[in-house]
Length: 295
Image (tube, rainbow, N blue to C red; front, side):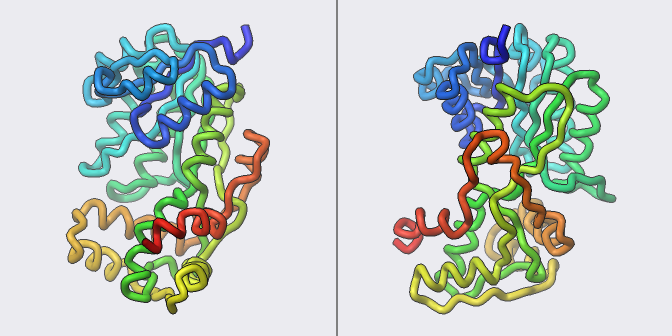
């Protein structure tokens, strides 16, 4: 049996990345695709893709075992439960255990560049311990360490266009932003084709600093936009003052600190190697969405 004939399942299929992966699998010729979501009855757009839709609620492990029944290859998209410390680790461990019980052969997991343990709860810590759970599972796995989505720049750009300032605690270090579309194509290809055990950094074509982003935004908008380096404390306090939750603000701070240490600057050919297409650059991405952004 070819891998394309195996039963594939995508968790978080109602999210932006999950939907794109499901659609990509269908375009690549996958014949037996399952879209897993907490609300299967409300996801007609998934059923319209010609796939089976099953309930999978990460907070109810019994639904995971039922959803994974008969599945041979599984894409575990990291959850968005950033509102409570350690929540994601519990959810991911439950999913991996359910996959073992269900007899899943291979898990593809969406992680973070340089996942590592930290003293307190953090995004890198969540991904590190999830990766450890995969290592201990006895299953085959592919870890996709996705760099930050290029779409994240949109939030920064909206503020920058209003104030003329692009603020961060990245200390002028770069990020290899990658579009969600490129991540989805890479995840679909990995779910269809990857074997054994492998870790891939999924990046855009270049590491880009906030100074470079400010320069592109200035050129596209005709406004003068400058990057302002601030301290991590100032980033967190500024976001909280703007109405962002404390935990979300702390997460943004952590990512800026990761960037300032050079952890998100690595550039790899993973997207090209797995999909056959070069990933989109930050400049091309911003030019594509410029009309909506400027509007």
